[in-house]
Length: 501
Image (cartoon, rainbow, N blue to C red; front, side, top):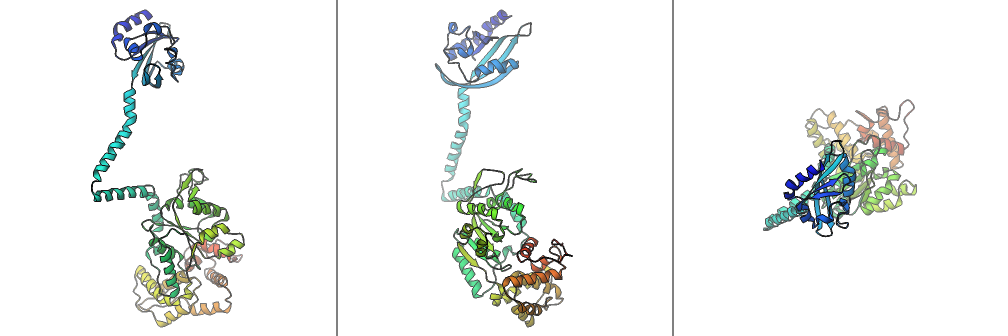
């Protein structure tokens, strides 16, 4: 059989242009065609009877070839397109495709192996260089299109938009869907009092820089509006202001919300999640109620502020971001530092440029303007037409202490609009009585706040959240209200659970 096959090989395949070889079962060369000797500059007398991977004084000592022929080939009848890349002593570096087929004898044992070799060096080099060719041609086309100044501007604008928005567009869109329900997104800061003018002056001073800002003030004074005003007047105004309320998030989720997590980082993490810092890259991040941030996360926040670096939960890869930080708190963070509840170094990093929003009782000249604004807004929403605000209503608004500040004012006015059936506004709240009650035992701001929250809770039968609850009346998030209750040591009577709904 072997002789017959060799005769066929000699008569027919010797004229084939591709190098062909016949190996015996021990991988020794029996015969090769003229194309092989020509392509590899080999001689017949130095080839026949030699192991293929010892051919030519070692020039066929190709990594992987021996393993291919000794291990892979015996397991397969046909092995196609095994690519080898090797620098031969005589013919230099080559890339070859090998095709092998086994030939069996009558006893079903391998007797011969036919090995075909194709030199694909030029094809492979062309394939590998194709990307560079495409890039070079693309560059030429771009340069041709940039012959005029207008085309240059359009190209630059498109490039910047793609570079800046491609990665973050979907994340920001998802975030904005959550934020769209916030009614104050497009409101401006209303008033003409000296205290408010000073706040606006400081906003104008700092807006166009990337300096970290700390907005201080009591609950309900409009600290978020200050943050939005700074962002709207900054170079980052074309991006969304990203907001995180540190008091509204559960402790086990706040790190994930800030820094993101990978799939499987914790129970329930069924997909990867980008944190607010990643979404706010090249934009502004507003950290509301920063005083509620857990101590164990403060060091991670400090690192982002200092170096612009952090890692997602479940991933050691460092992410770099360019985020402008605006923080806000109603706490005295210096006291928190003294009590060991807030890091001193983080406080120094945040308090670079403080802006204090004055309480409503210190800018009472703004109350009539605020009342007009909210009454008009609420009336349109409720389909009512309130045209007259009696002087006694204005006086009651001016004389009230407003422990809940502007947020409380809006709630009082909404109840008044609901209570008014005609064009004249009638208050639903007895503010004179509330003011007299407060003045009896007013000692500190916290005492006023604690007393007021307790009275509202009693009025709602200690219902913290939901419809007609204390949180709704006070205009607070339920998590914020519960946090204030813990801070002010407000404990419900035994007959009421703390989490009354």
